[in-house]
Image (cartoon, rainbow over all chains, first blue to last red; front, side, top):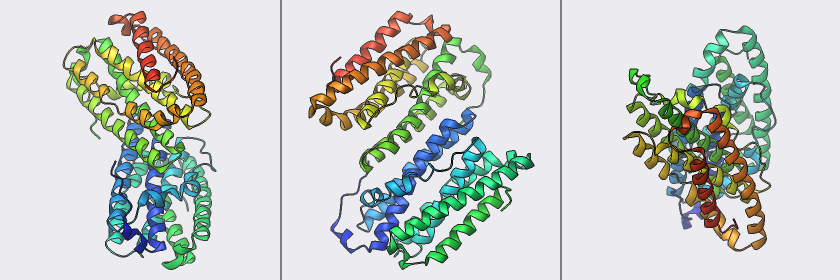
Length: 216
Length: 216
């Protein structure tokens, strides 16, 4: 465990930086949990292990975020803890009916969280800005979802239609969560406006859906 | 992913070795999932991250088991898959009421799985025997459970009494699962007898309960 001790420099970090670090750090741990839970429902041992690898990758990613934030005097554990209730139940509202719906949901939700983290990190001072953006850019979720879903979707137009509807519900629901986040943590609007963030999230979700061959 | 290709040597491995590798490999992935699910219920960010680290450690452990089995011509993915239904719902029957019951349950169940894996591995040919036993011996679950529970239990005799009853239910239930395993995979009785395995599991559970300060 490489927990960073609280530093006196923390007092100098802006409320914006503290909140962004909290969101990015917490979302890394939420991804660990989600990928492991998905692994447990995977139809094959190969998918199970691929998702467990992604889960383990996110643990490493969390530690890198802790280190990068710690270098700027920000205690990421403390900041992350504030988001447990809001970001902890991202996946509780919409129940997937099968493995394909489950994967689409995970891919879109954690894709949105990555987009949000990158858009918010863009207004941080360097070197934290590049550190967090680079970390989020390396997330393996995209290639995993594509690998698991591409062939299933292109082989079955009915599945594509059902997953397209499902994807729109997931995106609508989660963009709502992020809007509540902005209301609850108004310091986040120091950088981009709520409209700009909404636009970034919508575009990211659209391009992920198109990438999977789903109608938008 | 370091998936071992099926080797022609696999035909030479005994049914006993194939089954033991399957149980040990599957139980590593079951531990990943369980620790991540527990992390999601952890009361503090520190416990959450400690459990996620353990989960990530189990992914590495699974890969080492795959490698060691692969060196003997055994395809651990294929063997593991056979245990998904029997070992996949180890945790579904008994619902913990709180965090302490949850941790006790995880500690005892995965402790029993480690003991079973070690007892079964003891009858494998070298170098697989030592490879698997060493791997299982390094599992971090013991130190984590002790760290989380020790002070809570010693400070609260009522909690200790409740957890003692709970622990006995968990152990009884899971020893039953392992007895079904022996019935379903009779090749496992080539090494130790069912009575000897039962004895090993009971003793391991007893010493874990005593280690936590629970009445046996």
